[in-house]
Structure formats: structure tokens, C-alpha cells
Image (cartoon, rainbow, N blue to C red; front, side, top):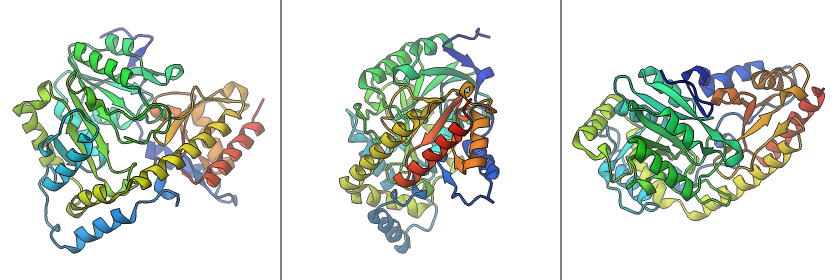
Length: 412
């Protein structure tokens, strides 16, 4: 076994074996419902609970039209409807230096199923995977179910949450199958530069590993760095791109995701790997057929003004969130959010009485103020907090005022 390194760690310091939904459920149980305060959740990454974030009429009409046609009541091919695969391939190709074919896209039930498929097809006896810390805990849970050893590399908060590539090189060995990159960042709210992504690809090439690029928040960037898909560097290293309609189109409950082999090199293109992908899809199935059939209409019918409006709103709420959190003395934030819908705030619990750590903070905050925030321990970073800023500005402001009151009340 490799010795633990300062820049990264193996499974011994992994996030707790519980899902984000599980922790948020426990936090909701802690709320004092005898209090008149309305519960405000800044924990779950579902913007649609707020009326300012809603799907377009075009998206709704595309689903209704597909359903009423009565042409999509049967099973779809397990890899996805041909027209759906083509629609996603065309959509992804808009930002790539090469054209994806429909055969390189596999439709999944949300990005969670895409994660399951990716890890299943890459797994082999004795293998390990490199995951970011902080990160999205579903990767660790999926790896555990498939007996894949997990090794965590740190993201660097003082450097825009960039990947510690030295840690990646130290943690990898001949059994490493892949590394995961989440961009725009969940939970950090960062957006990687072209140059940093290129370095990640070069590192993956040296290590002969696959890059699993989680781009669920693709294009939700509102800072100085534009969103660059990892598949841009698919000629350097093999890249599996995972995504969904959930965030950009504001339809998380429709469960439309995808896995795409956005690469021109490596084993991802050989017939044996493609056959494994198809067989895995045979086991898993995918989204409802009529929802798949609506994807072309959803993509083609959504106007740019919808995306621009949401980006403006996310910029507004992220700025508000950053302003309010940095005004709380026991909080610190290394940088303003640049993308996605969440970001990380460091908690200095030593400045608070009767608060031991981030978990204690979040449970007492839920009980006393009816505000739900995700403890950083849930995403692998103790004494940090993950805050969701995709909310009604007025609700967000009230929630953060309550957080400040809570911190003032518990101040030493």
C-alpha cells in the first residue's frame, strides 16, 4: 500500500458513507417546526424549488407533443433513441474541435446513472480511481459498490480550486483506471481555465488513465473564465464526458443525462469497450421514452435569452451570497463563485461557543434558524460549508441574515 501523502489521501479520509440527500433529510428532521420561521434550504442542488428558476414553455411543449403523439409509449433502445443521441452529439459538438457521432453518445437516467455506467465499464480487479476532494460523494459510493479503491486528491482553495496535479501523480499507479474532474465545480463554484484543463489532460496522458469529465453544470459560468469542455483535449487523453439537461435547462426531475466518449485516442474507441458500454446500458435502461423523444425539441426550441437570463440571475445571487457570507466573522471564502450553483465557505468553529465542527453548526442552525446548509464533511472537507445560491434573492438574503444572527448569538 502506498504511503499517505500530504497532498492527497486514500480511502481513510474519505467523505462519510452517506448521500447528500441523506444528510439533508436528517437536517430537515432537526428543524423546530413549532417555530414560525419558514424553512429555507440552501442545501439541495435543485433550483426549481424557487419560482425564479423554471423550465421554458418550449421544453414543456416538447414533452407534451412527444407524449400526445403516442409514438413513444414503448421501450427505447437501451443506449437511447437514435434522435436523442444525435441531438446530444450535435449539442456537444458545438464546443468541440471535432464532430461527435450519435454512436458516441449513450443516454442515461440523469448524470447519476452516467456515473454508474462509467465506473462499471472501467472497473477491473484491483483497480483504483482518483477523486477530487471536495467533490460529489456519489462517485465514492459507486466505487465502493464495485470494489474500486478510492484515492482522493485535493483541490487547492487558494488557487481557484485547481487540481493538485502533483498529488495526482503521487497517488496514481499501474492500477489507476481514471481520475474525475468536475467543471464547473460542484461543490466549489469554480471554472477551470483552458490552460489548467490542458495540464490535466497532459497528466492523464503520462499516467495512461481516463479522464471522467463531470460537466453537469456545463455553460453555467459567469466569471472571467469561460466554460471549456474537457473533450477539447480528447486528442491528448481519453475523455468520458458526463452531463445532463438538469441544471442548464432547469429540469432535474426529468432525469435525462448522457455519457459520451469525447476523445480521439485510447481504448474508449475500441470495439471491446463499446460492447461493454452497450451491455451495461442493457442492464441499466434509461429515461422514459417520451422524455427522450422530447430532447431534440428542448434543445432546438430553447432560445439564448433563457440561458442569458439564468446566467444573470446566478451572477446576481452568487454576488449576494459572497457579500453576505464574507461579512460573517467566522466565515471565510477563498474566492467568489465563478460558475455552477454552489460554493464552499470555510468555517472557523473556534470563534463560536458550543459549536464543535461543521456538522454541529449545520444541525444547530437548522434547529434554531430553520436554514439548511450542507456541511462540508458531506463532500469531503471538514469545517467547510457548501452553500447553494440558486435561490430567490429575497429568500437567499433572509437565509443569510438568519445565519449571521446565529453566528452572532454563538460568538465567543
